[in-house]
Length: 275
Image: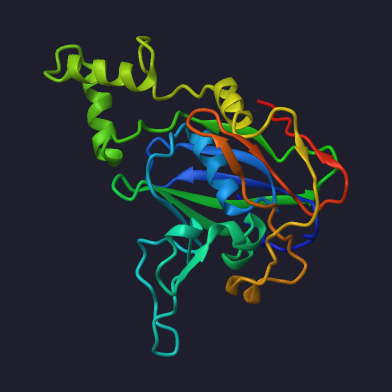
């Protein structure tokens, strides 16, 4: 797949087609999404949680480079490895608030690619790759699931080795842990139906994405509080979109009703996710 550089032809209201894969998954677990480039990374976090079936009980971060790859010295010095975290978790000099960075800006810094790590214990590393961009029409949804393969691994299953152990036990009724894991998976999924790791439930993902936002749509009430003056902005092309503001939750777990404010005049932006 040809990788396109972020920023080419960009501007206010861009729709980014992004392919997201779970690094080291075999067979590959991936999603292809259309996402508004101006979504702040804390919103992109919620999109990825819903797209892969996560429940958000763990820490996460965004980076422009693979956080597990060794850093190469530049002119004899190891470059600063930036990471974007929830604002309240920023403690180190290289930490940046995810609320102040848009998806478009992150991909620009990563030359069309970026990484999202979720659950530092299980190490669920997602690679984001920009496929294409196009101008957004006023009625365009904020996020749209295009395609994908396989369901996301179960929460707290111990990384890919642990998840494979669970799948092996489920597939073999004679396995000594078959009953224990069967009960655990039924509790996690809320279903006694056989667990099929190859099945991708597109309607369920679509509902989960829609549940992140208020169903009545988004009232645009004025300028975004994000000023675009955070340190990372000095490295981003000036024409990139200021992130749509932070999601303000009123209820959170499987459903999160939220209000999104954006610098889009007096129009209304409606979420219309199609599977």
